[in-house]
Image (tube, rainbow, N blue to C red; front, side, top):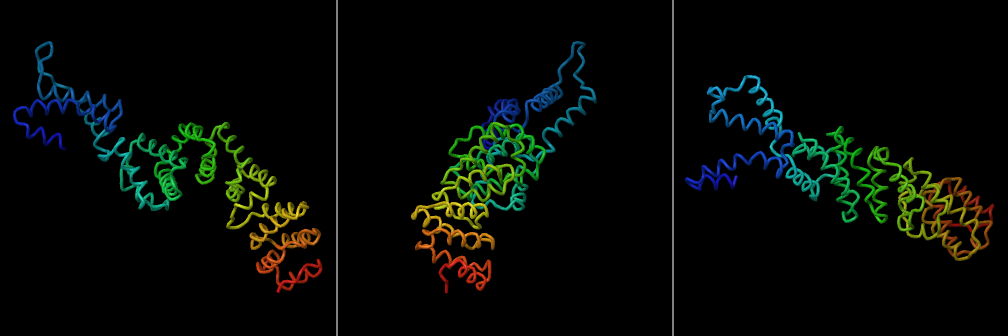
Length: 354
């Protein structure tokens, strides 16, 4: 609009500049704004040329004015409607910048349903396939970028799921064509983000090449201590479950020492109890008992019975300063009645907890 206003104000020179602007308009639409594809550009260029020939009639070889047939006119009408008039005005890379700006806003919803409403209010209501595909690629890259915080990744995730629901065909096509190259460029330090991505986004695992999925499997099997807290979710994801189980079987005390589980997985409790049973180091016994006390509210009845018998059979455990707190938390968890718990500790000659 600024350019047009300047042309209008430029006096006699305005006509020449207006013609130059008109001649370059299709190139600007294709190259700068990406509003049209190369094929659409070609169709509209023919329309523009025929329009000019009609507006400024030229003579053919037999000195007759140019008179396009009705079929050509109908073709041009079809091209104009198909390539331009049926689409909303905002498309291309400027539209992509707009939707990305929306998603990175602190006010973009983290709920998928609300994200769909938000996206339908912008260029993604009736987008070109290229716009949707590029948007999906940027969202995937954002989910694998450790520079983004948890809140921003939540916004990216809701936007990705909303886009998948709104434009499923393009979403599937983009995953098949772009996902593996995006994941292959992920560094080892960011594999936790990739494992999170495949667990949270439905069907992504099925689109991974063997080389990419094997890398994730190896990461889970050798899960760093700093990420051991992720084991709960990894155990729930069937394609990675056996690798998570393998890692738990090699669980060390320092793995638990930095982890906090909302609900401790049963296999983690069982493995910690086994470690306590096999440990003869006084310090290690105290460490396992301390970690088990933190998980006491998540024990099953069988696990409490097993733990008390392990403690009874281990002299270091029976004499540990951690014993009183562990027994108190197990009793307070009310997995078994207090009377049953007291009877069991009495049978095993363990201290009575008031």
